[in-house]
Amino acid sequence: MKKLTQDFESLSPILKKVAKSFPTGSREEKAIKTAANALWFLQSHNKLKVLFSSHLIKAGKALSKSELKHLHDMGIDTDKPRGQ
Image (cartoon, rainbow, N blue to C red; front, top):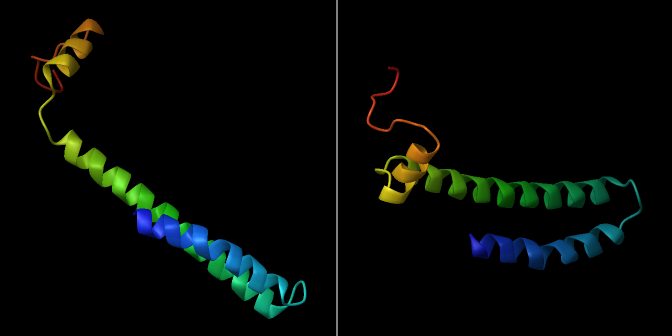
């Protein structure tokens, strides 16, 4: 994950410089900007994927005593099966 972030941060200024070497509105400038946006999207998507995977792993585990106490303190009966 860090590598992708580092790649984007190191490549972004280069892509901007290359895009500026072409006339504004040219196909080349648009292609470079599209590539930069795609790189940013992939970075964002991968971050979200890692966070979501982490959430799923945590969601499958039993609650800790402090988490159960917190739910109880909020008035949620953790001993009662779902849907009852």
